[in-house]
Picture 1: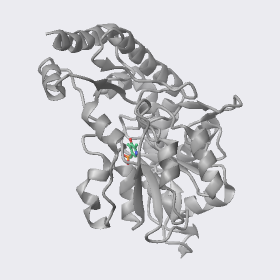
Picture 2: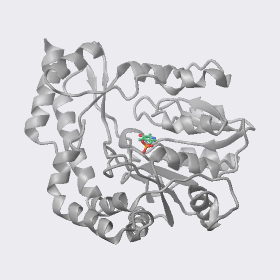
Picture 3: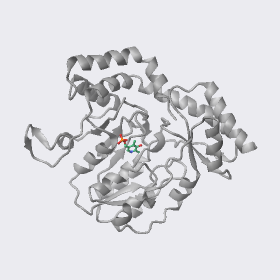
Picture 4: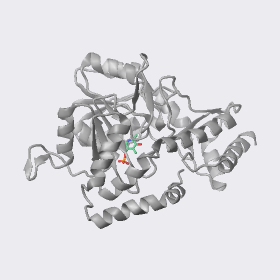
Length: 371
Ligand SMILES: *Cc1c(COP(=O)(O)O)cnc(C)c1O
């Protein structure tokens, strides 16, 4: 699905030098690279504070820990997302409340959100799924009405821009109370190991998030809060410092691949290509098709026999996961989520795709449909 090796080879000299710099400095933890990266990413996103941490799941967990939630408090998330978004809710003994997504954008449906709000709702976690922004203007309006904090799960959309109706543009992850992201190698801004970060414009929250990620301490060995141990290491920060300067270029390369797919599939009535809402950009963390009248398993097999990977993101939505069985959740009827789960298929999309590969993939998809 990705080709991180070819991407590395193009920047090998710079990367190797930066990694060796860390090895020479011996500041493996909290080295200069980590501060440099946090500063550069804050400037890139236009957000006041960036707190690096160990991975995108920790980032979500720390964000929720900073909101002073009590066991049983309700956290609204889409069911149609990667498990990490809801897993941390369950881990903190909060109650996940699943809502629907828009069938065209795959992101949180504001009407479904509004209906799910109760007096116990304490946080809303929209996900910028596949690389497109959730409809933040209506989501923030509803959250504002009820005074509920918003945590944006931006693991899949770093670099994406959202446009408000007054023309203001903001990067995903910087619009809510807190934003989180992941630097897992296959993400749009990927490290060569694990990594994550938390964003906020709120000074008080920033201090708290920093403390929680560091055993709840501000002064060493004085632990004021229950925290955890979640750090971005210096080697990963050194890698990310270099890759951040190329993020826009990388996202453009992904968009170019997506444009090619869109054109090739435009006339294929069994395929719905990704819809991009006018208020959002799309950075194509995934290129996800909706299949109609196609045997999805057979298509996956057909592609596999021609060495083309394709993946269902995600085969089981949150509200159907066994892990929540003991949570006494209501019996959800999320028809759109189930409908999408039965129809989505993601094709390879990354920064190193050339026309030959794209032609090969699209030909095999179309040949299967026309056979
Ligand atoms: C990848 C991802 C995460 C978790 O990130 P990790 O770094 O793997 O912990 C969370 N949410 C979404 C939507 C993701 O895609």
